[in-house]
Image 1 (tube, helix red, strand yellow):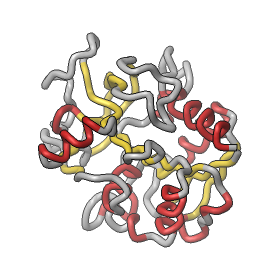
Image 2: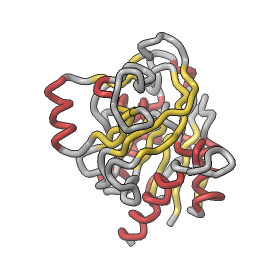
Image 3: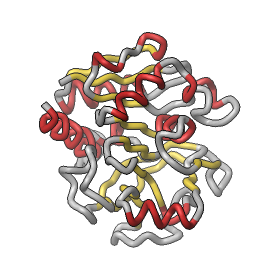
Length: 233
């Protein structure tokens, strides 16, 4: 099994993601420049956080048209795991691999803090080791993370188990106070209908070692992906 973390101009969490996957989770992982990425060489791919292309036009908008995204889309169609973290989530939205939009935070400022997430579904390539309802502590760091969509589509996402994470308080309640960016319905992460493409604003790579947080909850995301890959072999 082998994964890739794609480097775009402006990526700044690429090495963190590769380290979490390769050195902590134990999955062989390459850092690959976006113009050199070949999806058929890898079993999974991660689009990392950062500010690809300086967030010009919109966050993730230019990266969505990178040569790498053609291969990423093919990997998604083949059922391979595709994980977009923060700016990577924005790129998945802009490339239409995931529905909706990510707007500027309601507070109109950059936010960097630890948050609590409630796992809404364990039926994905990234949450099969996480029981539904489990609370995770994972940090965020973004300026444009406010997820929005039409109410009708939100109901479809809910009915199809495509809403994967919500911002909640320490008791697991999706309150307004627990919502750091004003995302509709406290949504922190969604997946495609098949469950192999996940976009999430929080950074699991920054919560994958006990040195950073005693629970190392982010590691569950990567180990779930590894378990999913093992079942595909």
